Length: 199
Image 1 (cartoon, one colour):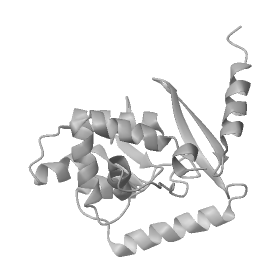
Image 2 (image 1 turned 45 degrees about the vertical axis):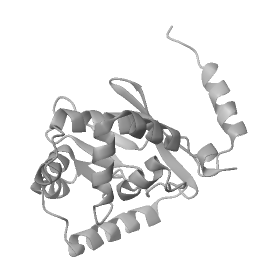
Image 3 (image 1 turned 45 degrees about the horizontal axis):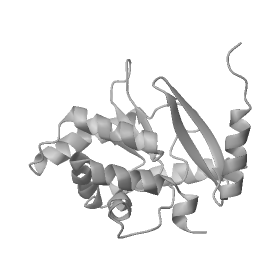
């Protein structure tokens, strides 16, 4: 079975790339980043694009991230009470442009991007909005903490976390096997059809 069969986000990404000039510009810019991020702030993306003369504005960047959220490439956090709108990546941002253009055919998910304790890291948020690159020491420390957390988890090996935006104010999160087959996907879809509606 091909990667396209097992990873439908590639179809969504390519359609988005082909239909949106802003998506092409932002994804091309991400390809120039030296490292992948777990979290990317809207403010930071706007600042970096502005530095290279881009006319893409913040609302367009937010819409870009909302579309990536709907495709299943990560989770966009915004709305009332959110001080720093940001995107939590499920896939490596530096590789998206190659996959979107068809130059690459594989897109492997990142390890769990979401904090396991449900708390936001304010230090990380400050770095995101500073417009400065994260230092190597900070990156290694974050990776070590993330690795230690994942090592303590059970049941996460061989699965991918997916986020599906069911409604404007409701996202559904679930895990599926990395090697999910078409038959299993159809079975899952059929099961969802049997769920009762509101009483």
